[in-house]
Image 1 (cartoon, helix red, strand yellow):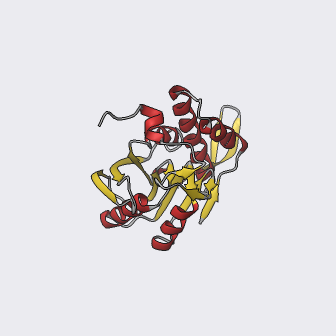
Image 2 (cartoon, rainbow, N blue to C red):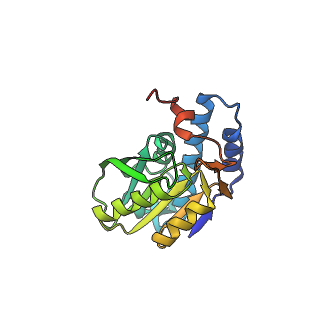
Image 3 (cartoon, rainbow, N blue to C red):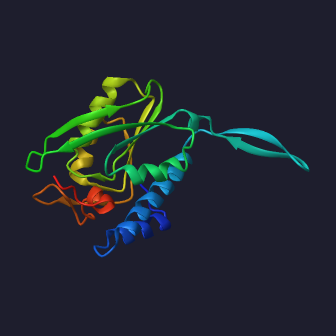
Length: 211
């Protein structure tokens, strides 16, 4: 399932962070806000049960969302750090994991996972946060690794921007996953970056690495 989050505030933030003249502070803030709003969008799909609560003046009908206690959020280092910061504002009871992965800079853009630290994934709703889904090779390798570590109840991917080639690869190899994204861009350039995209999220958030 592919869901494009077209909420006006999400799209406003996306437009702002696409601007090549944005500074680092406002770029990070935009990513955090998008993560928070995507979290709300997904939380609204979770099963709700009716409950009643006692107010100071009587009894009120309300809801409980038990599934919010059964979530693992996985951050793909380093670009997903601000995205996860936003997600964590919604799923405050979630467990968290991290995966360090990178891809080669030349075709076929092979992926390598160098660090992984995850909680128990068995029967959990796993949200994989990675701002950009470009070629799909890195995320495909990450999903393979997640499945090797346990059997989640559901795997959901949060991307800020996705490219059609990456989406095709993910659904070909992992047809059961759900992808939430704010935009689907059509193509990749020769370096494997999304066009028009917004550039390298890690560099824009934290600065270019010296190595």
